[in-house]
Image (cartoon, helix red, strand yellow):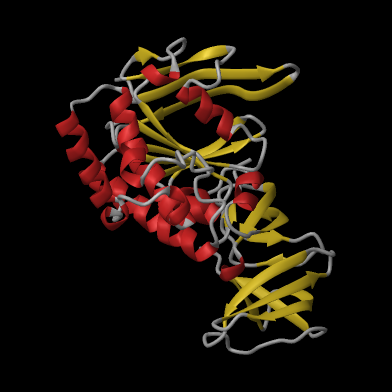
Length: 344
């Protein structure tokens, strides 16, 4: 059974640079998918290939089983919201939203009804007569969102639409986007380099790295069960420790053995422990506190181990049995059930 939107072996080269390297992906109708990754990882180029702004060198983009390769962007029935709002400064809010409907020569009554519906959807009805310059950045982005949705596109593409906004406003608009997605059911593909934004918004996250897809899954999948060291390091903070497993114990680089570590795998492995799953303890990994940051409910420690690795700990202030200070010799341990062996 074919997916609603499918990428098949997509490849794009710019001279000697491979921007997209043999990407395949299936997206179902109504999903909120986020393309996440560092700059230059291929996420925006993949989005532009779906939109039709970039022509792939190989592979296919299929919507409802129909190839979009060679189809002009304005004939793909795909909406787009950019980082820059690209509103027409001489038009009012209502006129900006109406623009794609007028281009498609929709009846006047239909345009008026749709504009009213979109203004209500983005909570901007009182602003309908204002020009973009009279709006805040968040309001302008909501107008851009309403305009992209006005003609009922099959898919909405969003390319880092909130990166120019401050943190509080960005979180407010994220909430608006989630609400609009729930109310409209439109399929959204959203590009960001912000891991927290991806975790907050997405049904599934597609993690890009060097032009390929590193891992696809829910936020929980990528955070709790990363399939590579790159995924473990990019989604949240993590401690990656080289260990050797045998007979119910994990042996650390300095020769310390951690007991009660039953795992079916044996030999050299890489262990991931999140900072919130580590704690100061009476026994465990020996080290010295090199940094202590008080964050209110949490105290963040950096502990340098005997083999020279810095491990991060985020201890709940009220739950911690004791605290430590810079220069103090300590031991740290972790919940074995929360520790994770990276499959690579």
